[in-house]
Length: 522
Image (tube, rainbow, N blue to C red; front, side, top):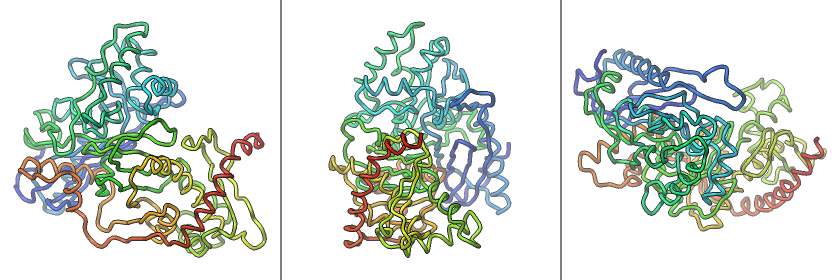
């Protein structure tokens, strides 16, 4: 296999991201400028039942080899033969990868979107007194204990997709704290798995028929924070990547913590918001969230700071519906239609001419909407029935649903000092003003910060290399050193904030009537 290291310059960082549909790799220089990329795809296993989503771990390794070959070809075309100072890994969170004592995969991996263990998640939430979403890995393993006891008895290690790739490269069972928090709750006092909750979990598993089963604490990978040892390439990893044995790795992380890194977010009070088909708001905190809320999920940033996630399913889908509904004559569809619609939305008044909307094309678990089909626009008359008013009302409905979870955090004194916006909404930067007014919080769109988990993985690799070189900066300080360019900022406008508070209060009344609307819809 051709080596990437025949010339010692430029010295930089390798970022690996194993997503749901494919794997990508990037190589950056020492300043984290991307010099080359490679990618390869893979698919879900076929023939599975409803809500079953599995992939073969061998496919990830094959894809890594293909992506690295593409990267080498890409770099060679530019005359670049780099040296890799450190490696970072990001992967889809919450998967269940089971391995035996020899490190062989026992079965295909169940992914974050596999829905078979909703009952186990609800049971664990009641037992442990903390939010255990159905995608959390430990809920998956409880399902395995009950439905595949022979496989559970033979399990010696459980990890995630990112953790599995790290194991295949290093031979060590280690995992970044953010990805680990997607397997089992983290104790903020120790920045390790919560051992009290582990004991309760193991007590439940011990009572299941078909045992004895191994204790979860013995199966989980070792937790590591940003900058700490993520292992180093062994002979197999060196062969697979074409890099020297001993090349250091940053702790493998989940895609959400890596995306936070890629957006240079690490200080308490910063909120990362990404608007796409769905909407995610990840709030960096200075304390753990207290209690249980269906609207708020919990994990950790790469340095262990608590992260609370508010996830909204109905993001740009209602906007797409508005574009299709109005037709917007001559605009066509897709990007051109949005280019036509966005100026109309921006020109609409803050109160949308009195219109309110519900955006529930699909279900919305965070606000208790169990099924889609109750999207609507209310208050139409001959004066306000314009595309801009309807589109703005739909956007505000999505933002208000996102506020539902965010306001629960604010009620606990959880800090919110700045919103960093990414995703499709940034194609129309002026929409950041609406977000700033609706949340009464400054909004920033960073300039020069590369988006994406692969770049976040490379950034984590850079931090690992810096720590090895004696750098004593903490993670949040390290991130601030990589801001570049001039960001776009939007400050809340008092008059608009006041208007939107009144619209939000009206929206809350409409949301309370959603169940009756659903019943009327049959």
